[in-house]
Length: 486
Image 1: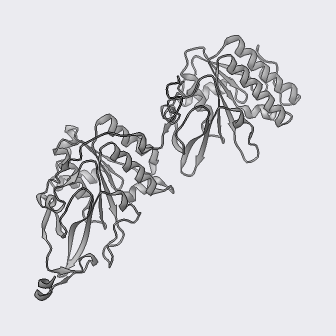
Image 2: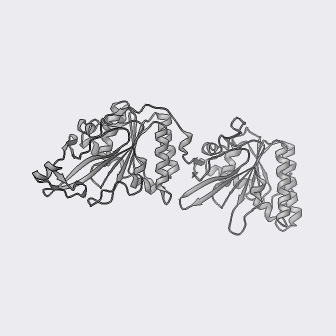
Image 3: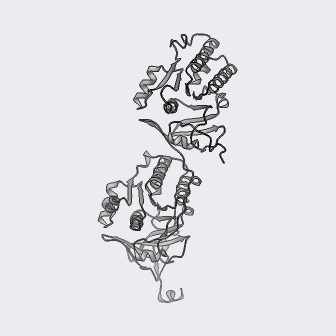
């Protein structure tokens, strides 16, 4: 348990990062933001400074000039109004420093920067200080020992004066300030990877934090960070009441419908009707006062809504009443952390109690090399903990075969209910069937029923009898003798 839960915190200025840090930074300590060029280190520091009242934040720049900083901040839509700047960039001369030239002695110039920062801080007493970047001081130090002495002295004086200090550090294959993490109370690492921009806290003295990598977006308005979903941090008590499917024959097949707060996997090959069946479950739940959200990774909005209208499914009316939210998701534009945050907000702010993901194949595209099983597990576990009913649409890649495959991703264990949709060839015709393969919360019908989609919606036929080898896709008709002995 975090021993500093009740300790006052100060915001980083980035809501998602504050969540990762269990509420924010501990005051009067030093924090290091590391990363390669273009990762957003300076931008994070600007967020940190901007949360203080006017005149109580200090930006110490050792690289860019003050003019460059203010121009760059304005281009990103960030305001530096009220942030004081101590410009110690190369060649700068002002009342707080002499002329700073990289051609001068390392020891003399390094000490001049050190003393200039301390002199300003002791005179104006800023509550937040950003030093951008300490790597510049390293270039002006004769060796690592001298650099470490200067940084230790600088941080000790600034923190002793009542400030919270954030510093940035460049990371590169040729120069990595290995001493800095040991001198800091917290370390935040930023990286631009093939899977997007990722933030990871590797050290936070005196506090717990959310481990792992968290996706962040860098653009207009600065940094937006999406914390990785940790299911155990969320819980809500709900009653697992059965929800009718809205189709009497399907209710009989499923033993009364599906229960609230469970995960149902709809599995089958392409075109068999998985999305239509899932939409039927969502519409039926909405009629039972369950607000639903459909996230469609596979098709655009117009295709989805047109098909629903053709089948007589009242999606438009339920959306207008606020009982259903349907959204087409472009998976290549969403990181899993970003999508999980979207789902969380819909559940926690809008009261959504039923979520459909269509489909796992489409969602896999947003994962982009990460562990799909882990991501789906975390999202489903969170939703179950919050009492939300989940519909997962899963496409299997074989139309028929000797073995009925449920999932290509090893995710059948996540499901409380599995509805298997299959194609059958009977008398030279291609037909569809639906059956229940698994139900944790009660009994269900053990037979398969013919499944059809018409202009009036879904039709479920009587149980299929007198056939064997149904799961192979090419069943055989039993003789009267064989049927009687079975």
